[in-house]
Length: 52
Image (cartoon, rainbow, N blue to C red; front, side, top):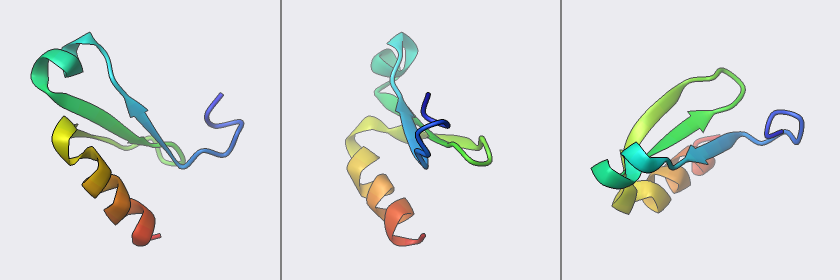
């Protein structure tokens, strides 16, 4: 659904991520993803959006 809507990034939060205090940031076009500290999510997304 995210690809159909043209979303650039998705944030994935599952049970493992909640336990680890992380979140997965997936770049939808290429499929690359990275694990980010949950408390730094907004900061990391700002960097990604500004660098576009």
